[in-house]
Image (tube, rainbow, N blue to C red; front, top):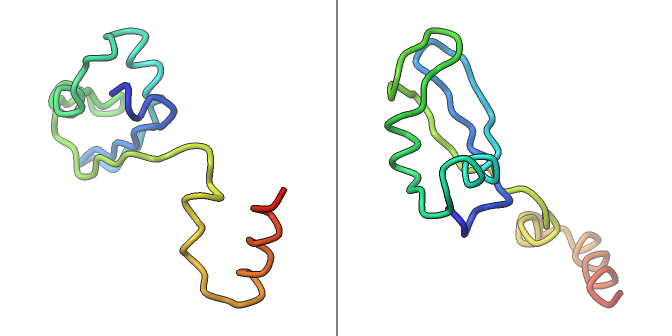
Length: 88
């Protein structure tokens, strides 16, 4: 988990409840060697109290969005803007 320490986990239960958990909080509580599969199997929904029954489990990357979005738009005008940002 230390490789995604600045990220969040978005967990959607089969009951429809979605929770967002900071990975840094999990590391603080359980240690950096915690495996993401362990989190998925042991997470408990706050609404229906079921354990390990999730419809969706996603890693949400936080920060440095300019790097994540770099290849998402092919508009020439935006490409020129990106070039000017990289020079700063």
